[in-house]
Length: 166
Image 1 (cartoon, rainbow, N blue to C red):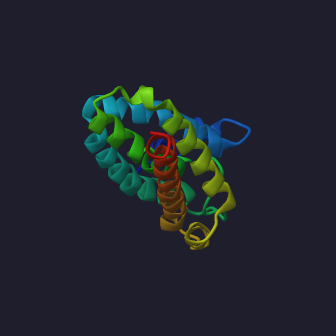
Image 2: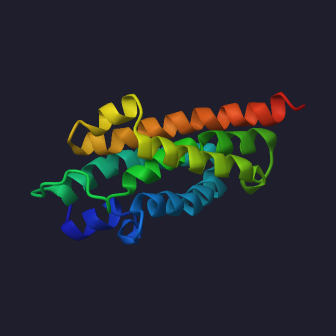
């Protein structure tokens, strides 16, 4: 992979170069991309793109950080994109199952974003363990785990809003 391609992917089309808080910018950049993927092919497209972004993200992160002392520079945000998309899985699947526009489930988007950022920043439990690996897989996996944790929060919030209040 060329250095230019690695930078393009690792920074998710340069969104990771925005300051301050590049991880937050990367997470925000993931939102319209998730919407577009859902519009194209629903949760199947979002899931497939997430898997592909993870695999390409590991390679791009390896290439981008090769020869650098920092294995996880702040501008690398492809990991946030993958984690954010995972956090949105319940929203995408819920919209498809309910037959509604995914934007109608905007509270789920908000919960997914806030929960993902919380878990990504605090790095509790397996999230922090993955982050401490010190390699490109660790860079990606801490956000995978943060995305899974955020998706669980989205499911709980949806149940609280719809199941308990219904």
